[in-house]
Length: 129
Image 1 (cartoon, rainbow, N blue to C red):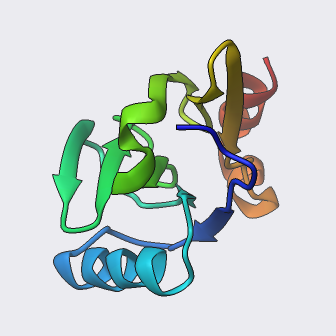
Image 2: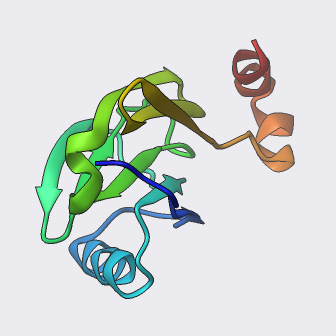
């Protein structure tokens, strides 16, 4: 599928991706015609890749409770996902094929907050390395 417009959203959900939140995000991706949503601070430790009603949810595992990064891809672009990976607890990447021989990399970043870095300076150090 060739894309002329790619609609990307980002959302810091500040907590677990409960079934209620999944339903709201699934509805939002439809109503607002969003292709991809980058989620931060989901606080869920497990990684998985699953299909939900109108979207594909790609989660990256994390041992840090402040993090938790995910991508929600609308089902219409699910087949265009060529790869995804976690760089560290605060950074992940997804690659979408927009047209033959044209790939777009989207980087989802959640930088450590100042109150976290004061309590745990190693988090900031690890993130910026």
